[in-house]
Length: 117
Image (cartoon, rainbow, N blue to C red):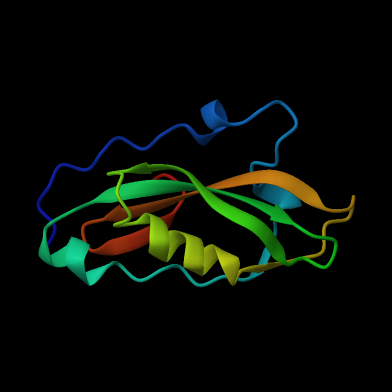
C-alpha cells in the first residue's frame, strides 16, 4: 500500500488560458478507461498526479495528448496517464474541435481517480 505523502492536488484552472477547455459539458466522454496504478509506484509506496493536456477533434477522438505537469516528475505516472488518455473517445463537440483541454488524473492509495478527490 502506498505510504508516501500525497502531493496536494493542483487547481487545474491555474494551468489553463482563458479560452481553454477544462472539461464539463463540452468534454463528455463516451469511452474512457483510467490507467492502471503503476506496479513500480505501488510497490515503492509512491502517490502523485498528472495534468494531461489534449485536443478533441470533430469526431470526438483525442489528439495531441501530452503531460503538462506531473508530481512526482520522472515518468512514473506520466506514461500510463498519456497512454490511457490517447484511447479516450468523446461525444463529438457541438461547436467543433476543442483545443487545450485539461484533465487531472490522481494516483492515491493504490487507486486512480479522475479529478480532485
